[in-house]
Length: 132
Image (cartoon, rainbow, N blue to C red; front, side, top):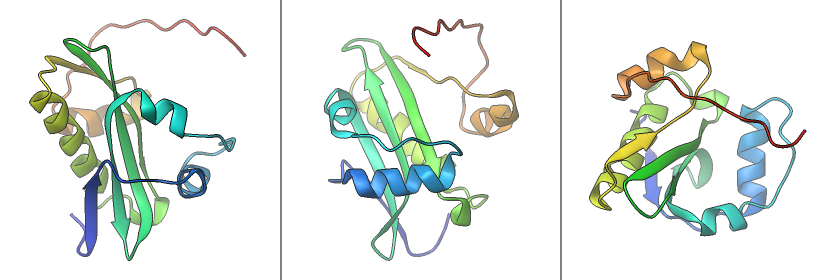
């Protein structure tokens, strides 16, 4: 874990904060409004260093036994310090406390080790792209 980093449950975040983090972290990120998606989530977490948003994760929920880990993001300057793992663990604990039985995540093959370290096990899944 990184010294002087605070992980906050449900922080109020602006589109500017999130778009800045995502632009630094995800090539090709298109700025967007985040409030509509956050309003439908079980919860979200932000990681802050000196007041700056450096990490984020949210959990979408079906209202029952299943939740979905979405947008786990750590600013490139703060990667490889276990911050992503801490964010995922906070999200998983929050989901478990809410009574969720299954936490799902989709990821690219190069992230398999990260998610295995977080306790996820691979399963078969499928994906249907609905728009371009």
